Image (tube, rainbow, N blue to C red; front, side, top):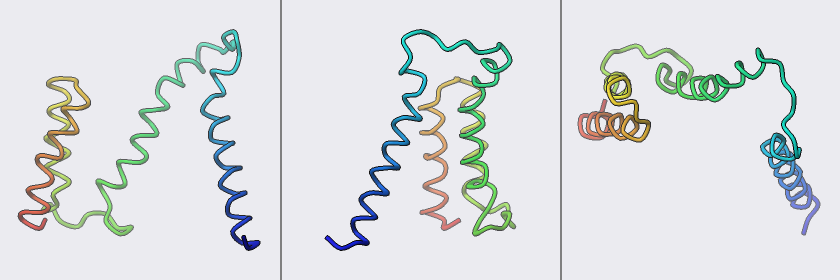
Length: 111
């Protein structure tokens, strides 16, 4: 094994250990960690904020620029998925509806 491969394996192992520690941080203590109410309320919104930070650029941007046309398959897919979510409040159905609208427009029509 060359030195570069050794560094690569070491980097992967260290990053994996950091990830496991960070994800298990709240499960390691035997008793609940005392937190102020404002922090507890704020942490409830963290998953939604992370999801929005990942999905919003994917929907609104193409190659670093804002979408320049309304003829983009992502826009009707997002609108239909959002409408379904507010109608039924189901995550799986929201994903399915979004993909059922997106795929025919993107693959079939080439949007």
